[in-house]
Length: 308
Image (tube, rainbow, N blue to C red):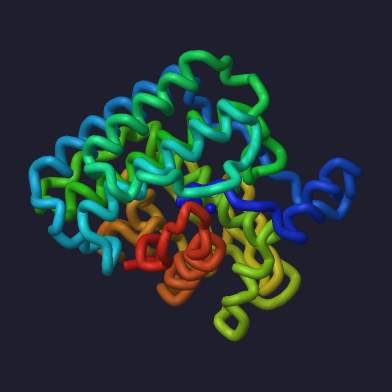
């Protein structure tokens, strides 16, 4: 999933089952809205460029051996190499139309981290320049197999890791643009949590014994960012996410879009948002997100996606 979850992964049996049921139009399937929140591709690309520049600047402002507090066990060099690897992986996917057989590419580990990052970003942008957003491209999200998916995903991937780099460099964290923050919240709730809970049941099943919600999906968590709101209805087997607020949620989690995005991804504590209701359900929401993203491919470690 980050992604980050962030992430392209080989199809699992559960993933393939979701694809078949979607293709068959099964009435029992949750319908996921695979459109973004209204940001167009040019806006995502502009955000990607800005976030990449801030990530690179933060990484050059600190020693590469410095620890990344939001990704325990990682140094800045590890973070930079990870982002470079993600960029190269997506560029390869789009260029070849399939998962690379050998990954990471030979020699990447020996390349200077910042040089690899610059080269990888150049390769990614070159692929985006030569392909229309509507062109086919393999992704881990069955309803959207287009280049546009990766344009959005890479913008969201980069903003989270830009925050990681700024935290590592002890720099003030640059505010996330409001539209990118709302879109990021929408993406992590719908494409990762709701879709992932069904498509990657083995990850979600790791929460066995930790679920607060009962079967039936009657319990609700409301997440609100500015004018946007979502209702999360969890069960031990699957999560659904709908637009709009619930009248009687177990907890309301509310905040500025960028702060809420950071909180969902474990890059900020509870002081970054406002909680109304039972705080245990807010922690439950972040544990569910961690469960469906912690085994994200591209070797994103659990420490980098679980709540802080």
